[in-house]
Length: 158
Image (tube, rainbow, N blue to C red; front, side):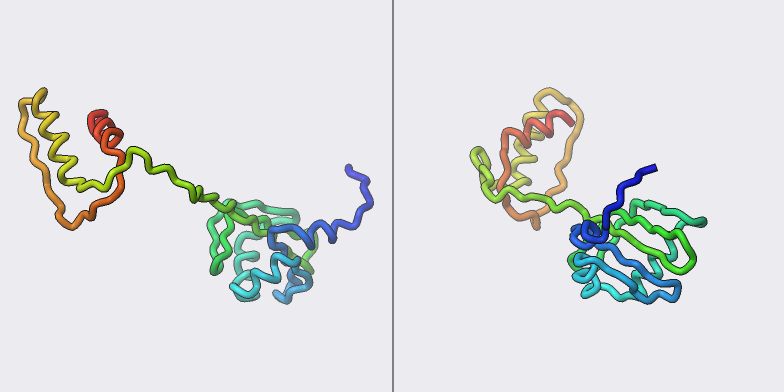
């Protein structure tokens, strides 16, 4: 057993993942700073219902992988905890943010009509294949940037 006597409330308060402690009636007893922001996007009642529906059957905790979204807040997992019948808590775990590289290198990419690229690749394929191949042309496809050589190579792998 761990015998550290530290006040963990400081660490919970400034955790980037929301933590909410409810009483048995669903009233919020405590919420950390991240949960304060979250409460602007969801209701106390909604969060309490989620907490109860994912609570463990006996005293303790239950971690669940779940996709939850409240406005701009997205979570991949929750942990519901209780060690008495008077209080229950939920800890929501933020989904990692995707970093988008804004400096995209478009060397070798050309504005391309995919229908023409497919037609050219079909003609090359017909040189080695005696069966009949038909292209269903979709004229609504817009032109877009594609690396034509890599795309043709991918088609040959199919």
